[in-house]
Image (cartoon, rainbow, N blue to C red; front, side, top):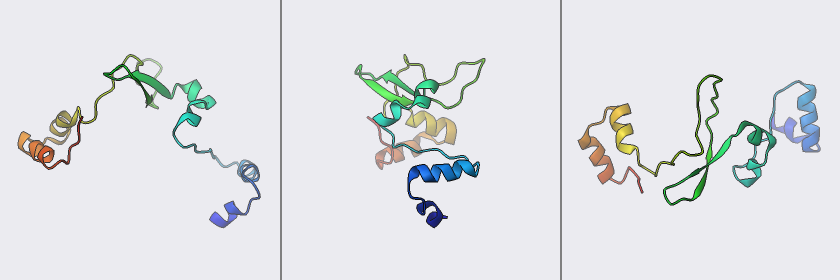
Length: 114
């Protein structure tokens, strides 16, 4: 398969073949400023700026799930969580870990927080 893909003289030739074969394809962009200006990213509101505790804007990827009759995703007025802010609650509530287990993880530096 790789040889077939690399046998095309250009990216445009490859995409023309994929289109002719009626295969779904899409170009993958590295995350960063080039992605922010993509028409689909803008139209879908995929990137949202939220403010951290210091008042700085922080780019965040919006939830891909959208429902017509309920609010979903990240509101631009939301506060971003600090690294590790929810460690204890997640370990306790989702994994039923006890305080001793959680403390042992923190003491061993397995949990990172700001």
